Length: 208
Image 1 (cartoon, rainbow, N blue to C red):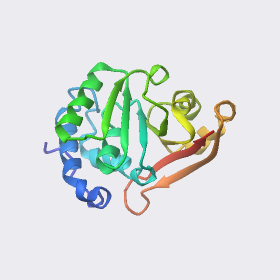
Image 2 (cartoon, rainbow, N blue to C red; image 1 turned 30 degrees about the vertical axis):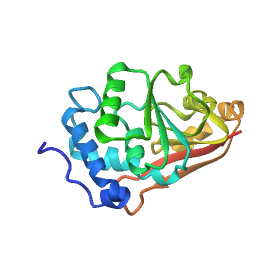
Image 3 (spheres, rainbow, N blue to C red; image 1 turned 90 degrees about the vertical axis):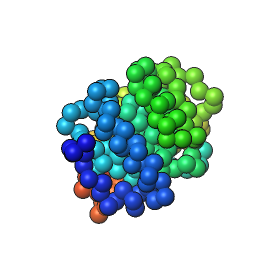
Image 4 (tube, rainbow, N blue to C red; image 1 turned 135 degrees about the vertical axis):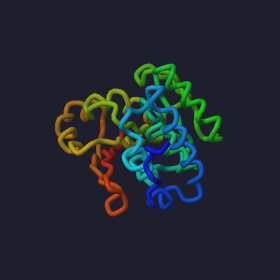
C-alpha cells in the first residue's frame, strides 16, 4: 500500500474519536477497491483527500433521523458519513450486487450498527418509511437526480447532494424538475475551505 495517500491532518479534525474506524475503511478500500471495481487505479494517491474527506465534510449538515444515500457504490458518501455520524441512521441504496456485497461486508467489519443496505434502483426502492434527508455523490445531473431522490424524502425533508464545480449551473438547468417535485430553499454550499485542498460542493434543498 505504498501508493496510499498519507493521512491528512484534516482527517482527525473531521472524524474525531471515530478516526480509527475511518482509517480501517480507507485501508480496506485501498486494498480491495480497484480489484472489486469500486475505485479507479489512479485513486490511491488521493484516496483520503478526494474521496474520504470530500465526503466527511458533509457530516455536519446531517440531522439525527434517517438519511438515505442513493447509488452508494464504494460507500462514498454513505459509509463515510455513517462513520462520522453514529447518531444518524443510514439507508444505503445500491443496485449492483457486487457493490452491495462490499457495503454489507464493511458494515459488519466496521461494526456500523446505524446502517442498512437496500439492493435496488432508487426509483424502485421499497423503504420502511420516508427519509428525513437524502444524499448522493457522482450519480447524475441535478435535474436527473430529483426524480430519484425527492420522492423518497418526507414532507419537509432535505436533499443534501454532493456536486462538482458546475453545481449552480445544474440548478439553473433543473427549473422544470424543481417545480414538479416541489423543491424549494435551494442553496449551493462550498464546504472544506481552509481545511481541504479540494473543496466539496453541495446542493441543499427542502422538499414539500
